[in-house]
Length: 321
Image (cartoon, rainbow, N blue to C red; front, side, top):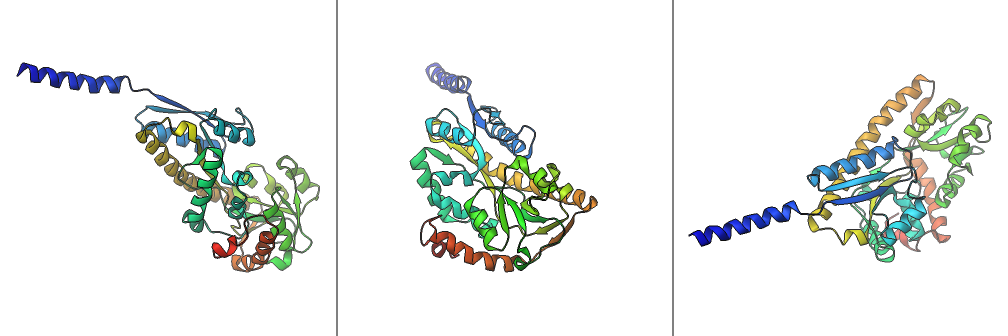
């Protein structure tokens, strides 16, 4: 009997010893935006969820504002295993696989279509094998993107003729808005306010929250709500780091990533409502356009983009677009 008790005691002590000496995990998460901003809040939420789900075993240290490098350097760092986790827009991955371009093309997909897309999973796996960067679950959709103008409200594509719109430098974005009738003017983010105030451009395309935060609305009169593209962030992890984690820790990170994305969408929607109310009070007029009219005309541009080789030939047909 004493021998049995001794064996049981040794086993129990072994379990406690394993738990006591289980190695804590510290992960470095980097992003390129300023501390305290909407995307930094998302990183903090992810770290909070990871800590909670791992009972404190996994700590995520956050490095915002390009502290560990610009987006190109961060992606390289994950490939090399020197940076563990990065949160940013998945569209940055088009440098590794051109088919990513189709997912960020205006008037192409709804949120539900992207979330249920099997082809995104295929592209992600191709990129993982090529770069060693793994995409964790979850689509952290940013607030909806709309059309902003001075002087007059634009409700249909035919009213765009001659309107100079600030866009960011992306072929799909520039070509689509040019094809819809506008003159797309790629400008750096820091030049937008001055360009609007000096009438270098007549409007812009962006989301409600950032137009409010950057005070661009002071130089704008109208917002045509189109929800014309789905820009979303993902959580990437270095495959080198991933392979060092236990299955339990991998599950924690996957669950936290998905829950964080859902939280971010709700958070963004609350900010949208608040921002719109503030800008309406300041005199900006909001109207909801018939998106189908815009999508129909944009479809012709999409075919030209495929012919130009922006993504793989036949992809529109494969995705029923």
